[in-house]
Image (cartoon, rainbow, N blue to C red):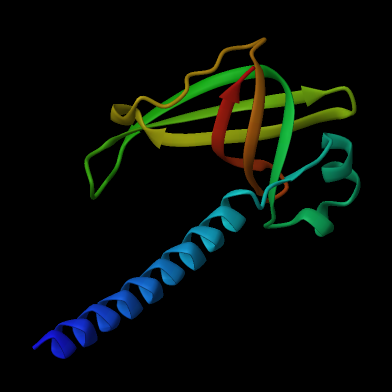
Length: 133
C-alpha cells in the first residue's frame, strides 16, 4: 500500500511540475506581448511610416485639438466613447483616437494633458492604452 501511495505522490509531483512549467511559459509569453511596444518619437513615425505600420508603439506628448464622439453600437446597443485628438512631442504632431465603452470608465482626456500612449500605428495612432503624466 505504501508503495502505491508513493507512486501516486511521484505522479502528482510530475503533474504539478509540468503545470508549473506551462504557467511560467504562458506568463512569459503574455509579458513579452505586453512589453512589445517600442517607444518612439513622433518624427520617426512621420518620417518612416512603413517601418512602423501596424506595429505597437509608445509615444509621449501633449494632447491638443481634443474632441469626444459618442455613439450607440448598432448591434450591441452599448454606448461608445471615441476620443479624437492630436498628440505633440518636441519632434512633431500626430493624430490619434482612443475608443472605449463609456460604461467602462475610460481615461478621459483634455487639451494640455501630458500623456503616454500605446497603440497600433496606422498612419494615425489607434490608442489602446492611455496613461496621464
